[in-house]
Amino acid sequence: MSSKIHTDKAPAAIGPYSQAVVIGNVVFTSGQIPLDPVTGEMVGTNITEQTHRVCKNLEAVLKEAGSSLEKVVKTTCFLSTMADFAEFNAVYAQYFTEKPARSCVAVKELPKGSLVEVEVVAEIE
Figure 1: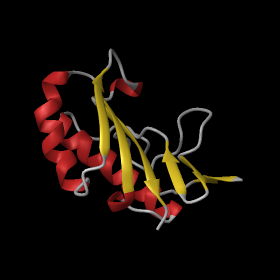
Figure 2: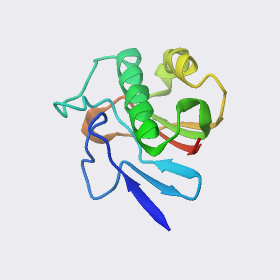
Figure 3: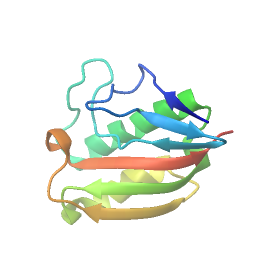
Figure 4: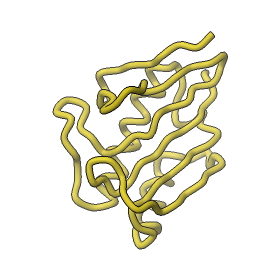
C-alpha cells in the first residue's frame, strides 16, 4: 500500500501529481524545481541560487515522509544546460554528502523556465 506525501514547506504540485509517494520504507519524490513554497514563484536567477532552493524543497518533502537527504540512495538531475554542471555540482555536494547514485542530464526545457530539477529515491528512517 502506498501513501501520498504533502507538506506546505515545499511548493504545491503544479500538475496532477503528488510531492512524493511512500511504498514500504522507500520514498519517491517528484521532481522539484526552485519554487518558493509560500508564493509559488521561481527563486533565483542562476544555477547556484536555484539549486539551493531545489535542495531545500527536497529536504522538506523528505522530512515530511520521515526521511532525509542522508538517506537518499538515487537522484535524477535535470539541467537546462551542461554549461551549469560544475556550479550545480558545487551546490549539490553540500546537500548530498552521502554521495548517492545519480543520473544528470541536460534537457531542452524545464517547467516554468527553471534551470534545474531534481528528484530522489530515499529510505525511510
